[in-house]
Image (cartoon, rainbow, N blue to C red):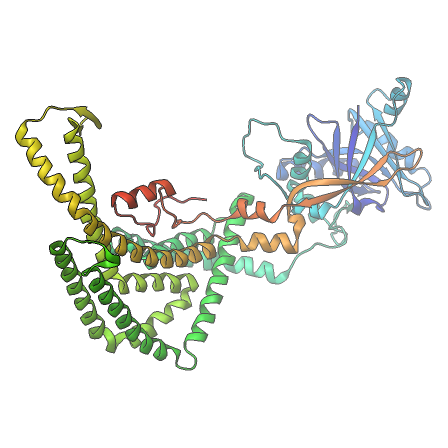
Length: 575
């Protein structure tokens, strides 16, 4: 049997007394949490431990005795050894430290009065007691990954190391008693020299409760208003409305007066709050840059000429398509109809731009103020402005896609007619069918017409699809930037950099001392979680802007002329 004893570093120089801790169930190991100094009354010790057990739900008990040589306490060892009758245990630990030696001597007395070492020496085995020193504060504050909450049910039995971390973390009320308290018991633990606290932090905690209640009420109204807007068709397509709903959900989470019950909820709240602060800071920097040196007016003066330039380029492109583009033989009648139809749309678009030109500077001035709500709001507004300014390109793409899709599906249906097949709508399959001569003749005429019109419709569809994809690519970059700001776990990354022990992936052991006559002493150090694992574990779920379909399905839709909406927000939250 190998007995592992986890001993806190802060108790290495503690005065003689009792070891308080817990035996790890199912494992031959124990965790020492504190040392109760002599003098003490056993009845008060039992009462104090029972109160702690009701608070922490941890089976705290007296593990044994700790002896530290001191003048005037020569008979302390025998006194502490006799306490095993008052605090009966299956195994009673007797730790003692001699002056001038780095290691501890450890004896394990069983309930029958026999020493564990004596029995093991008779069996011919070596020393089986290992003392593992650990930093109590770091272990208490750290979270072992993968995260498994204390109350979470799992089919897999918790590991010994996880039980050690959970025991130290749940025993925080034990560490509230320091040397400045006037109680009858004096303890040694990581806070025994004075409680680690901040008056400012405590005052902020007390003041945050009514503030959170008031903000929650305001956010509920905002959330209701955003959900009403989201029900409208046009509002559901605007990135600004989607971002407003997203922020409203996050604010209700952050400013909820309920305390985070688990580590995952706490990290989620902290990541959202820090992400919101960074978003606001970036938005204020954008405002300070926009409203300096009259940049709004310069931007408004540049916008109208750029729109005219784009419209002129589109006119030249349509005139090129109405001729003989790249030497291709086009259907002249259909080519002229489509070209004039699209040219009329461009004319309407130019008239619309010049009608709005006197108000563009004022619109941009008020739109720039949206950055005070955060950079993500400003980027969402920019995406909506791009969508409005390129609405004519979107119309061209829809017209071309519908015409091309009609042609492709017509050709595929008529091709099945030549083979004596038809599409069964009810059973969603291709069945055999017999056609008469008139049906075959009409089908041949229609197939020939559609086949000769296909190059013209395909060329218009290809050109306007490429233009639409350029706009979608630009909007996709904006949406990815918004998604990155919303989902990036900045608090978790900062915690990983500044205090890496808070997010633990595992531990490593270094040999601390190996002296003859003493157990093996190891030092337990925490291995921090990798940055990639931090991003994977704590990335905030967002309404991602990625396409629902795979790339193969997306290419298939482009080939057959179906409309694609890669900018459309998903209705489900995804990691």
